[in-house]
Length: 254
Image 1 (cartoon, rainbow, N blue to C red):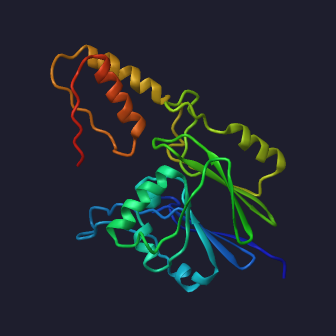
Image 2: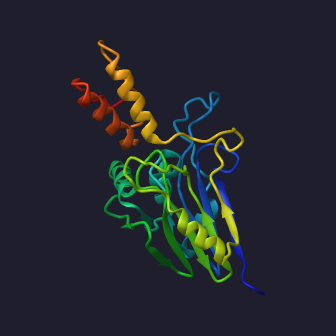
């Protein structure tokens, strides 16, 4: 019987949150992302919702690693809960690794978990899979897409992304590499589709910074700005605008 490549979504398909996808080829498995979802209003007493990983528990000896695209809760929130059932190595970028380590330390799993930090442009060999890390832009730094190379072909798994030609850190999405993969031939594309049916495009993060400067300069009273703690580029722009206007800054983490 010819070898098959199975793509099994355990969460994140037709829903916001709980992102987790299983790739199975040649009797071996890798997992992409391990997110949680927030409970709906009728889920009384529930703090978070995680994917059903009974399939992974059943075949845990065949899993070669977990690969994380970025550090948002809907992609890493379930990591400590899943690792209690299936202890596997985690491959991710540096900021993502730092966020995961905080979770593992809270659950007493840090010493028993292998975390491998990978830079964009590098490729990790995991059994019969070769997973290539490709830089993308998102509302959190150090985000990547994956080109998952197998004997049957390449699958591109984008993770969450936006096309920003002027990102704050100067690291533009690697569209050239996506183009190269397209010319070589892609077996399947699994792409972020959040708001894909809305017309238009997402503004560059730098536009937000210019708006901060304009609003801060025109205000003489106290200014309160809310943002996700993980959006370090947004926080940096708030700090830059405050400094330019000679304002004092206080950070409150809730």
